[in-house]
Length: 110
Image (cartoon, rainbow, N blue to C red):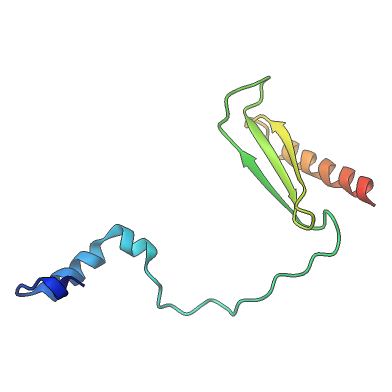
């Protein structure tokens, strides 16, 4: 597009070098590599609380000794549950909360 309006000796070479060094272009350009594998359809979920997603909202202002939120999402129903959490909690405490969420919801919805 530059050569439509401008020209100087070595214009093509300079533009190619500029593009190769451009950080933004390197992040958004299309890749010529082959895909790792063919795309597959997602499995169809059949039951509540069969597949879940767990995430944290971190670095919140401290309130009642809590500074993060544990978010548990059921992928089938898209139901979300939020639990106040302290980022100092270890993985055992968090996994116990997630286990309790799943077991309580299975009892509730069955």
